[in-house]
Image (cartoon, rainbow, N blue to C red):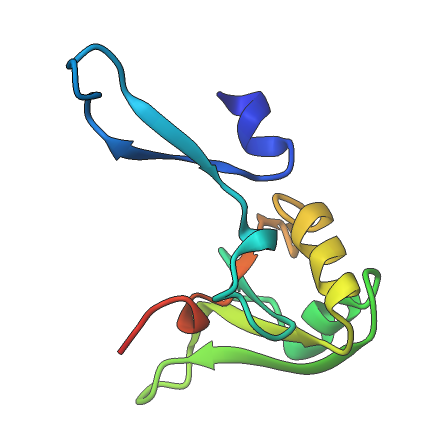
Length: 124
């Protein structure tokens, strides 16, 4: 399972619990690169250290391509970092490279999580 998760970062999604004869579990692989709901070049970056600044995140993500926009999310009252942010790349190809290569890298002594911007995948 770990090998499947790291290779192309595909997820196994159950479609139903059993077939018509009740014998097997139908599954298909979710491929985020083929998802028509994934629009744009923005990635979610989570598990950030409280020491991470916009400059350090920009420097880390610039290894994968030119960063167009970057935003660290802060608490609305205290201004403290919430531990996640969003990075927008100029080119989709560079965003995909960062998606594959930056996941589980260490930034400011914290192992970061990189995924697609979930705001674009959720309705409402």
